[in-house]
Image (cartoon, rainbow, N blue to C red; front, side, top):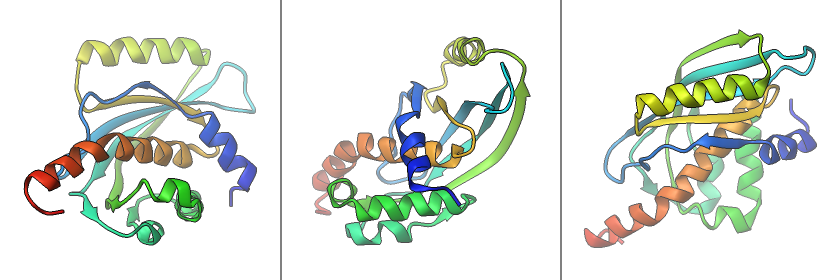
Length: 174
């Protein structure tokens, strides 16, 4: 179980190096490919690179108090605890007026024996050359990596919200 200060540490130390060029689709599911890079705390110049997909189902309008009831399929207890903590923060929860069924899939991880900055620079160059609008590169905390991934997802939801709400309004749904 992750302590509250570990949540805050993970949130403060999550950095999106490459933001996806696209946002979450209003009327369809969306899949983002992520790489999350974190330093191992017990070894020097060893980083873990986790990769996989985040799949966001079609957004639905929900009340903020339903946030903790989101389906976080494939996420562990630390992500669930983070979702519960966000739900308690009324200022943040009021921004999140709609929810997603989130799944992380195709998870892989590798250890790389290089400094964090070198690994991130190499991955960033590779990702930019691929130019996939659904790719994201994140650095975060190894022990709380799911919290880092969920923070990225929540930030992406906030970034997508304006366009989704505008589309709902154009179609007369709200």
